[in-house]
Every structure is written in structure tokens, then in C-alpha cells.
Image (cartoon, rainbow, N blue to C red; front, side, top):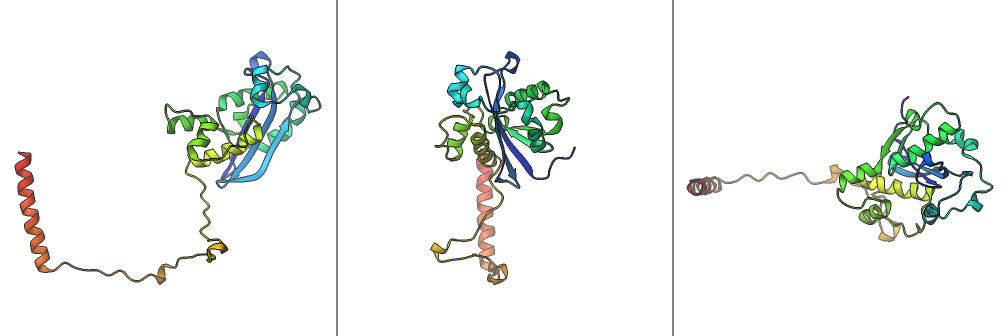
Length: 232
């Protein structure tokens, strides 16, 4: 399967707990498209009814209650639309083994005969961060502080919000956005500032005189002799 050229999808999940092997399920999934190194408005977002109790520790992290999820669809009802959204793209996930493990568990429970890595390329942004900043904290909050990305609106974890933040962090870690607007605002009195190389003056070549060349050779001979004495 060929990946979509230039298309990345930032993805995050929220869950009822830490381990799918203990019966824990996904309760929120969010994904944001980054196309040609631009965070776009194209996204996927869904809450799901887990039919499983949410751990108190998990609730403290994301704040999603059992009552809030009571009328939400099960993952089985949204699995096909989710697969259609991510299929063929490169997924960038912070601490990918956690989210991929939960998604693969959901795919299995829905009777699917493939895993997420069979239909997508998986990139772990946490691995990239650890390589760039060894020994430092590399969670999203720490990376936002390091790269000057505002996350003041992030009081609790949320899959869609964290995906949007991850998009900005990932671009910063991998060189920033490639599209750069060089136009200056009207308030600065300039519009569509452009440079034409043909308008620049030609370069002037200035050659050294014979006396300057002779003096330079004498300086080199003197200093080369002194360097040889020092080295010996």
C-alpha cells in the first residue's frame, strides 16, 4: 500500500485505564491532518461507550465521566469510519505503543483481521523527542515549553486537543513549517515585499597591489618560521 504523499495524521486516544489486557477500552479518539507540513482543519474526533468502568486515575487525567459516555456509540459502530480516515496515511503518535496497542485491541474485538500497522505507517514522536533531547522530560507539556508552543488551554488531556498540539510540536521538532509568508502587513506600510536579483548592483572585484602581495608573503614567511620553532 502506498502512503499518501505529504500527508501525516497526528493521533491520540483517551482510555478507561492503562492496559487493554485488563479489559480497558478506548473512550475518545482524535486525529488531525498535517498536509505539506501545515496543520489543517481536517480532523476526526469521536467519543465511544466502553461498557467498562473508568479508573479513578484515568478520570483525573482526562475528566471524561461514565455519565458523559452513556449515550455515545461503541467502537464497533465507528470503526469503519475511523479506518477510512487513517488508512494509507502516516500516523504520528506520542508514545505510540500505548495508543496502537489499544486501537489494535479494539480492532480485534470488532472482528477485524488486520492491525493498525498493517494499514498505516506508525511514527512515535516520543522516540524522536528522546533522541533529540536525551535525559530531558519529553511529554507534550515539556515539549511545548521547550519549543515555545502555547498550551494554556490544556487543563485536562483530550484526544483531539492533544493531537492538535502534537502537530505543532512535531513540526517544531522536525524543522518547523516549510511554507513561509514573506509579505509584510499593511500596518508596516509595505505589501508583497519581493526581491529581484537583477536589481542588485554587480559585484566589484578588487585586486591586491604588488606591494600588498609582497608584504603578505613576508608576513607569512615570518609567522611560518615562528610556528615551526614553537612546534619544535
